[in-house]
Amino acid sequence: MRAAVYYANRDVRIEERPVPSIGPGEILLRVEASGICGSDVVEWYRRPKAPLVLGHEVAGLVEAVGPGVSGFLPGQRIATTHHVPCNACALCLSGRHSLCDTLRRTHFDPGGMAEFVRLPAVNVERGTFAVPDGTGAVAASFVEPLACTVRAQRVAGVASGRSVAVLGSGLSGLLQVQLARALGATPIVATDVHPFRLDAAARLGADVVVDAREDVPAAVRRATEGKGADAVIVCTAAPIALAQAFRCAARGGTVLLFALLPAGELHTVPLGDLWQEGVTVTSSYAGPPADMQVALDLIASGRVDVLATVTHRLPLEQAAEGFRLTAEAGASLKVILEP
View 1 (cartoon, rainbow, N blue to C red):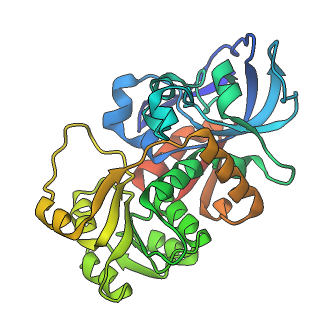
View 2: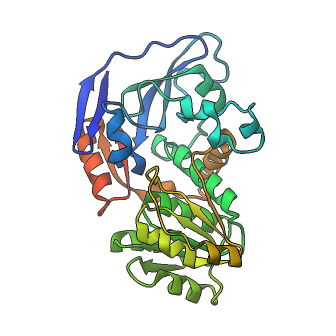
């Protein structure tokens, strides 16, 4: 089979790999759509592990099932996730599935940017979902990233009538904007430095869009009658966005870190101000199975229009172009590979 093998952002090669063999409880997935995630082009994170086949935003058709698999049949469209929790440890039982050791160990074989993927039994059991009729593969490939968004907004307390500021309007930020709108949050403020992305944020549900090079905290307070945002969701690793976030939060509000930040990187934090104003600083990573189901329902019902964020659909042979588009973060939002 063909696979897109990542060596670096500018070095993605189409190579031949054997079709994975499946065993008891496993599924062989014929990949129809595999999204390129923003994390896939973070070189400090990816290159030390290269070469590897990336792709964790995946949907496709069941090609074959191993002994003992129930509930899935060949030809059925499914959405799945590479990381699944054990659902039994103290972290899972307290709702912190993304900290589970099992979740951090599980993965696909070899990765979604290939013609076929072996889904281990634990992934089949805990992180694979039948896609409803009428929902296509490209839309279904958003189940994993939208599940991450669902979890983040649950942690941040996003709800009807609460104000939200989304700093960074790449794909993750746009999903945050759409979900906040679906939940009834208002007003929603979105920032970015690219006019193309600000236009997309306005089109997909932001009440106010702000050039991130301007006085973002002032703009957020103008939009919220001087109070600040109840939830500030940081979807970019730009240091200026982190500095802005702490000044955008309302009294008693929450700043949620959603972007991938380098381990050990230091930032100045106004601890005294946060303490005095009762601001919570937290983070969110991954989306457990319950949030995957919520995400799938949001997509199937049309409450979140994930297809509106897709700017490029490319064959697997053009994976290198897809990585270039995603890394440059210019006039592109979501790039989908279709093996």
